Length: 566
Image (cartoon, rainbow, N blue to C red):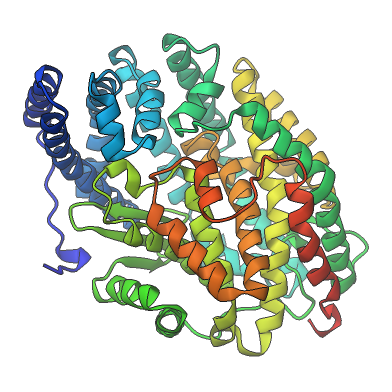
């Protein structure tokens, strides 16, 4: 059956029935006398998991499309309350897996990665923390609702944060400043509420960690993200490489930008405005972008052609910003229908093409991984997921003329240089979070002071002028990952280093690079991050010298660009 998303049936899971059935199957699993019987029971438990997770995905998508819809607002609140209970079942499921006397036989059939995930997940839950997990979920939802509620008066219109973005990229410097200041004024107006939400999140996460036997939330955060083959020390080594090799390149790019704009000093409202004649924009509206994307994916490969036709034919994308819609972009997966869903907020900038190709990378991976029986293998760990998305952005390069026409070279320069500029920022976000959770007693003012210190290290080239919120270190309020998924941000930087390797390889052998990418997507989450990097023939971001070697070709390409033409 090929129903459209609007026709997908939603029903609230019956938690009493789910509890009874899961406990029954878990009991049978522990008592069964053969690995074959355990495999059958695993399949049955996975069917129950599929239903709960599919309903949660549908509710989340419909809620974020319209946060004012009272029905799905209530359903999201239901999942905020019941997901911790569900996590309890998963913890029992993973405990049973890890302790199975037939583990060797199960590993032979399902692979070792499932058991690595099981071992880490078991550490992250105990029934004693259910109430605090519910509190954590509610606080995250409070942040989402607060940022989605933004109604900003600007040039005679009422705009949300996403709709303000085109004005922040205006060719008129004063307009850019006014637009950004209007957005920051929203965060400043709600500063107390944002500080309170975040402080409560830090405290409840720290409390959960200590109840689970961790000294603080840091390792619990890593275990929640199922990181099995690297730790905080490895990430610290990577951050040092970024400071040593990438920050200087980013500074050279900023100097090129300053020269192009003809200003004495780059200000915060110049950060994303790269060219004196304006940033490249797609030459049509959302429907036009999707039509061109159909052509692009039809020509890229048979796999992407089938994938994108499915996405459009079945209404599996909601792309345009509108009142009441949650901010940001994401890709979800609905197991019951075996389809991904792309959510974004188009706003008339080049970011519309970026977010479409980015989320299409996530969705394509899920589409190519749908053959995996193990639910965990549909979703790689998050840093591996971001390889798929960021690399897809670069594999789309040969078709960018469809979207940007005469501004194609300008777009490519912006896209590649923005990838470099992002990495120091993403690394700063990670180091900030390590500080926060290693010092949960820090006050909101101390956290903001730490942010300003890190900005001076990782992004030293932007003047904050008289903007009070930014000078006090409030820029990070708008970074939803900090609130929603702790430590899920360095993932983007690790993946970007991998994606840049695909970019470099595609310059000389695009077919081989694409074949390696498809092989990576088919693997899904069946291996750890480092194993997936190896499958794709990439260098590990943690290896000394990787960052320096990766940026060599990129720096040379950027230096050769004819910026006078932009």
